[in-house]
Image (cartoon, rainbow, N blue to C red; front, side, top):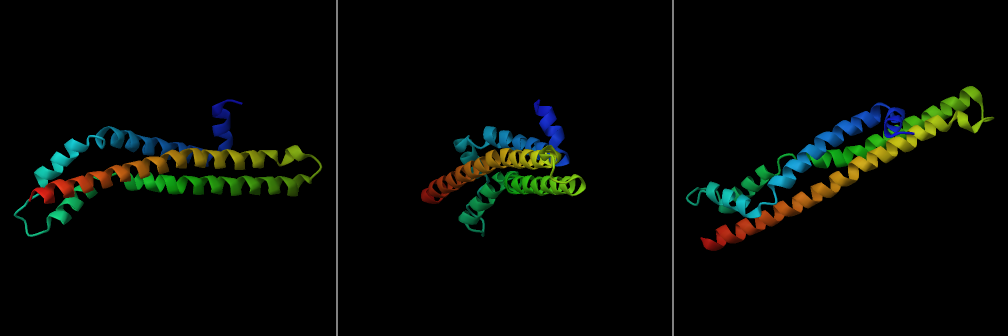
Length: 159
């Protein structure tokens, strides 16, 4: 079987997972090329901080870092939803298996193998999508925490 055969066999759920994966990896690549420039991000935050403002410097820094988090919620949601979609496909595949058994009996095990293969394919696809998105989300949040701490140390420490 080719990859396309597996995708076709997984059905609409696998196509939804592929779409989510494409969206998520677009954001991941965007963040991968923009966030690692920690010094540039820090300089950008320093330029936007108004030391004479009535709001605290800490809240201004947190606001600027929060703006850098754009897109990360979507990555986190994909990491959360993908295994659930895989589980939905599993339930659907098992349902198809029981439906085939109800119609044809248990005489031939190949009767329900189609439903089981749908269940396994969607489970695998859900995990393949979820795992890298969860890793990327954790990595980017860690980077943003580092940027925020460094900004607070340098900006508040220099005041």
